[in-house]
Amino acid sequence: MSGVLFHEQTARQRIAALADAGSFVELLAPPERITSPYLAQLGIPVSFDDGIVIGHAKIGGKKVYLAAQVGQFVGGAVGEIHGAKLTGLFKAAARDRVPCILLVESGGVRLHEGSAGEIAIAETMRAIFECRALKVPTIAVIATDIGAYGGIGILSTCCDHRIMTEHGRLGISGPIVIEKWMGKKAYNSADRALVWKTSGGKTKYLLGDADALVHDAPEAVRDALTKLIGKSKPVNLGSVKARQKELQNRLKRFGATDDPNVVWKGMGVRNIEAASLASGPEFAALAKRGK
Image (cartoon, rainbow, N blue to C red; front, side, top):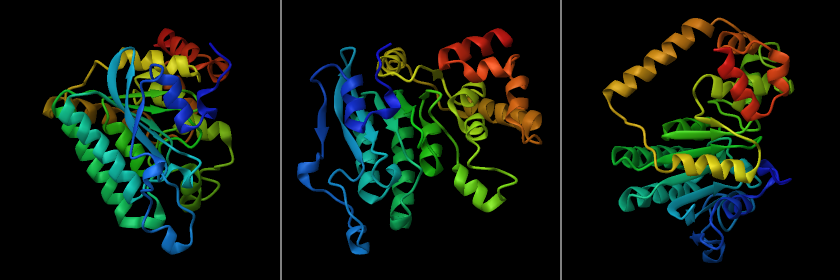
């Protein structure tokens, strides 16, 4: 593994690290000056890419459509332009029968843009299912501390596959939001161990919400992508019912607990301390042996 950490890279650095050298072509790039129509009205600085980089590239010689959210701009939150770029990319993937990859880094909808952001996420979900109906693979990579929350958390689970690192986090509501509504005693967002054991990559891999748990390195993410970009999962009544049954069983087993260690033990992790210190792939091996 190189010394480069995937979660510390910018959106464009991540794309450059994953794509074959020189193959990425950006669409609606910053020089086109397509910015949010709302932020400027509120006196908030805009970004010329509106917090998302989209385009097409090759990974291992195979063409893909690729998007990377920019967490440094309003937490990667989705507004009208950001969402339109994302929707358009998945629609292009469906049209051209080309796999589509989203490098996720977002807390959800941009509150400044309200309904426009919500509608954009709904339209992107529809575009993802257009891809899946045509057996065009869709992959979400969740590998940063900002994670995938809110509408983007839901959107990520609509994809065929999710690749996570132990830095990644996935959920409906972020830790601060949960603490605000439930109280600090119920959920302390400052408790990093609790946060990562609740919504982090290790737990999501255990529960089957992530298909791969990899090192926090570009080459590890790229390797996982090369294994998945040719694979799609069926979306039909049978698959939906099977997934619903899995979720019902999960709720029955763990719905009453507030201790993530109980979930880990219930899913076969025998040595909690060792598993907590393990890398992503090491954890996956420990979990597998414990089942």
